[in-house]
Image 1 (tube, rainbow, N blue to C red):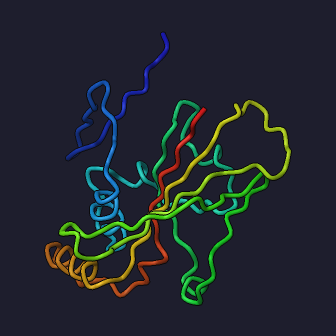
Image 2: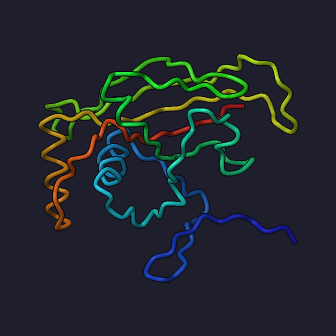
Length: 187
């Protein structure tokens, strides 16, 4: 008998299965406010542990190496750039052995009250630049959305309130060095 992979969580030591058809589909604002800002604060990502959204250094990886499995068409992960390069304004090149992630556009993400910009969403598309046969890899188009916080008064207020609610100090880290990525495979 062939097993069927059923998504699950472990809540208070118990395995909880998702119902069939469940799909993780957060909005841009939810990704920034509920996931990326918590990661910057080093808060637990319950009910989603680190294996659901792992930290990945993807800059030199091929997109198919980042996917969790052959059937997976969407993947979320965190990545962190070198702070000293980011502070000098150096953009990181995203080049792998077989191609490059080219920027295709960007969008601002507003605070919940729509009064301030709190993050940027950049869209990248993977383009093969080197012809290299990769066995057992179907031809696919890869798109990635990268969410990066922008330090503003609204974000500082959100981070401070979240930190206070969790009885900790607001971060003094370079939030611009950490990002959340959503990678999509279109066949």
